[in-house]
Length: 612
Image (cartoon, rainbow, N blue to C red; front, side, top):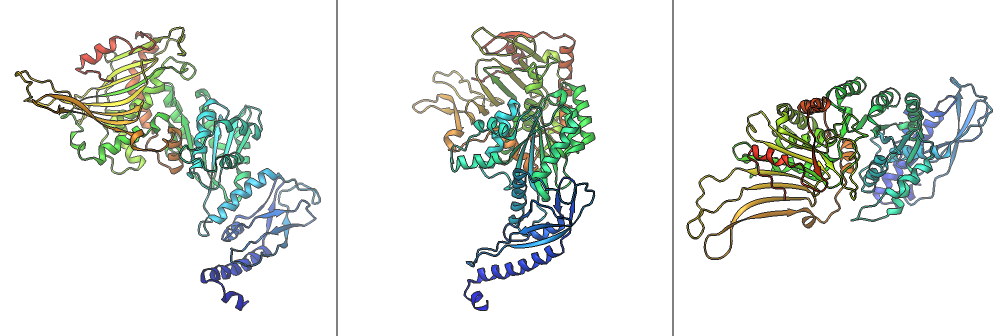
């Protein structure tokens, strides 16, 4: 043996010695191992698994199919590190079994679910080989509640696969679909497989990656009793996670009227005690101030605020992330970002086609709950907030809620609500249900930075074009000294900073410049950073970005409870008017710019709308 070790490379020699020590340690541990059994499973104590996890490679144990009177045979496969030596032998060891709480016969067959055992071993094996010093490290389980819905099929599962494909999920993870439909795991895999796609800029091992992802996707029919179903889900997750446990994420893609019961059942039955638990909640976050307060009260009675992630996919866009970067990393903008230099701010959310909003907002709030309450107000908050102490989520959310609480409650004379009249040739939906499909308003922020600066909002569906952008118009240059040939004053265009998300993501700055040639003739031009020309990369989907943030525990793009309340408070006069039929919905044609009266509202506040 001494001769064999002497010829090994120094690194291999250390590996070999460590292996011999570990092998001796494992066999000593196995000789004193005590097992506990129940009617449903036999498990090795966690402390012994921690010892096993220090092995450099996988050390799974497999029960024999027959259980004898007081003994169960286990086979430990001990594989040494690669030091160019023969494979180690297979050793068999017997353990005493104490049948605590078991009512099964000592001679009965032990039923083994091979697919679940394989998944459990996958979790345990990968946990044990990651790092010898992190034997308490947990895996990740993600449960999609409402797994057969359109959102889950078309957005959530594809986003999870994209994260897996790009290496952003932990090595040992499991995806759990949960719904009330009577499906098998293979049925769910067949449903979501066509929605998965690989990165355009990679396309490496695509089919292999898809197969691996689908094998880690499981399904449970939870039935109509939420507590019983959640208890079954917990059992399934524990089966797959194995002895090491896991951090857990729960994506609640369920109807608003089922949310409170589902969330409370989840909190009671399926939270793990061996890692953190995070809960993703889809908008709407209530259907107005009262129902939102009820929902928040229920959620906070079952979870801590830090566990809740209220998701709005529109906030996962790169343009939203760029707001803080532009403001706080570019000195050229920092001194200009206030009432002294900015005349007005315009926020546009314009869609050509509509979406079915009556099912999500049966009370008739339409686009106010679908777009304005979350996306528009969060955009305004990020745009207008003070610089946070750090980029930590709580520091950012603290500054956002200060802005939202400073926004003056909307007055009806500063609001235009409209409803689209669809023609027979359009695919515009929700035309029969008279609810707002257009929201135009002027917001006022009552603080020292923004006092007197109108924030003009235009959000609508069934409009002339798809456009999502933020336009900041600066004040005019005082004392115009430029004259045309002949002595007439030249009109100087207003400087603008435009952050465009749709149709093509871009940052544009509008300036005045001299036209080349004789004389002093000026024109307005745009300095253009077009992302598709600058960056030749595949843009991540917003759900992918936000799910990645949840995994990382980054909550700055998710609304905190006080943010939700503050936003509904700003809208409360408009919601009350809708409830009492005290507001008129202005009709506008499909494919138009919106209600004609909107232009009068902008003009009243001295704003020239320049979205073209």
